Length: 281
Image (tube, rainbow, N blue to C red; front, side, top):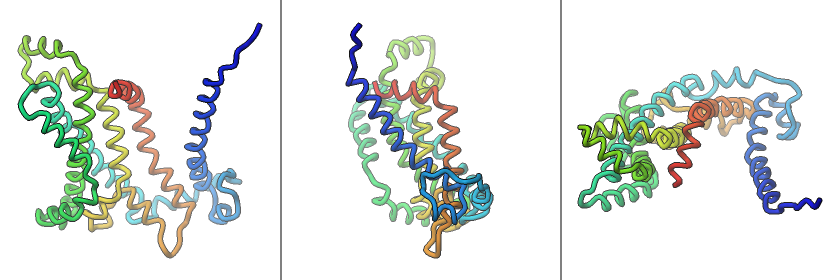
């Protein structure tokens, strides 16, 4: 019996394995370095496993940095949670009329949203700082949080509206007509019917927005003059200074910083995979 060899499938699997190795190897170097002493990091290969599990880097990473990583986690959650919720909710409100209602000028409004996605942060950095300062948001701790949250929401709404508009357009109009006949208002249909059906797309947006805002450092440096309000990305940057860098502490803090995003992906994995398939249609 002759067995044929599928070169196309073999090439595909080989490419996937190579890409996985390219992605995994940097993570392994971070994990290995976080369990090594400074002397071992300097004298051994970055891909060699640690001789022993040295936990001192993790203990020191909790107190190092400006601010300490525990305070930075709290600051990051204060910024990220309302910014993600606000950008997704306002994006959904903008996507609903653009996808379900027919009115003059809807195409131009949609083009303005797309145009808003093209603006780089650096282009509006100075005007936004001046606006926050004029509104008094630059002088208080609550104002600092508010300014950064609003900045993330403003830049997140166009992207969320773009994704959700395409998803909403795929929902049959007959479902909306039936709901309207039963007495549903537009907001009731949006809140009770459309959003529950859009859970996969909302999960994709939640993960993407959370990751982007969680890793952001620019707006914290521009709109937050107080070190005690800095998020986790700024704390990680403060661990590397011109006077010297403790790579063991830096990698340990970096590994701790990755955990919230990984946990969010684990909890939203089912919806995330469905959402990627639905949004891509």
